[in-house]
Length: 128
Image (tube, rainbow, N blue to C red; front, side, top):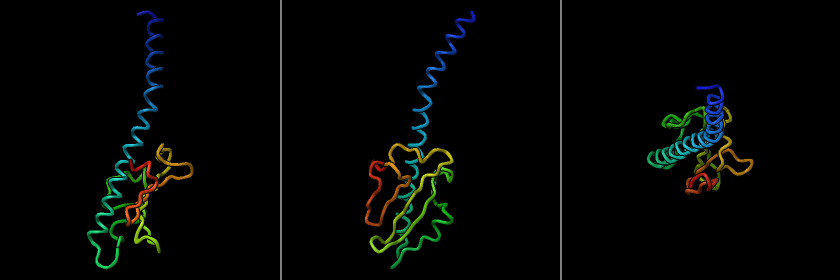
């Protein structure tokens, strides 16, 4: 093998890598979002299953970490809130440590996925 052939092989590998790596990165981000969506549904199922006149999520969420979730804690932080308009809202906030907040489904300025007790999903592009 000559030096020119070796250089051509390195250039071809570099070109293929520069195309494949961004696609791979976006695929990883999408797969972690899918796990977070599954965890939000799992949290909702647990809340509805244990409903006895009120919702208690103290055994599900502790310090932003979900006790029954499969999501990587470096990717998403979970929270549950209640308000006058919804019995609860489950939110998974994307963290910046691993670039999860750069998910293409998030609209500008948004880095969280939420689901209310009335099954209102936001942002809808992340749920499709």
